Length: 227
Image 1 (cartoon, rainbow, N blue to C red):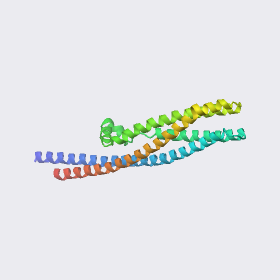
Image 2: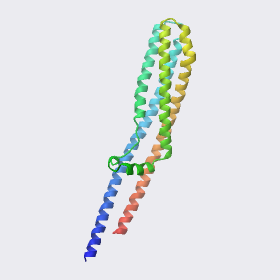
Image 3: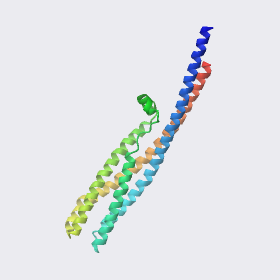
């Protein structure tokens, strides 16, 4: 009787452990799915903002071209400065948001630490990690090109105000024009990569749902066999 009683208690403890683990797994997967969904929504918003940023760059470039046409320079300088500041403010906000997108983890990662990260990231597609790295590199490139464009625009405006047209044209031909082209190209690339990233994360979410369902079924079968 004592042996049967001990076996019964052992089975009961195991059932409680597996039930608790199952509940924890459901909670974690639900949380992770929510975080991934939020990241997908952020990616979509980033695509919209990057498209808007490209349009803002075209407006900036158009106002820069107007600066060298005959006419009242003061009004054209003011228009260019407004476009430049608008682009700078929008890019600053967008850059911080893009850089602030962190790798998604659940709340229990603080408790289970490395083991949790190993399990979650073993489910993470390699494509998403590569796209994250590529996006980070493109953000850095876009920022570097923008700093060069911004500096060139400021110097061009100073030269125009001093009636040094030859200096302004030199800056346009040797610096600003080339950097604007590079900025436009890398912004478009970044927009494309963020789009790919959104697709990869959507597929990751679907994979988590499938694997979670499989684990739940396996656990339930094990509990039935154990009982």
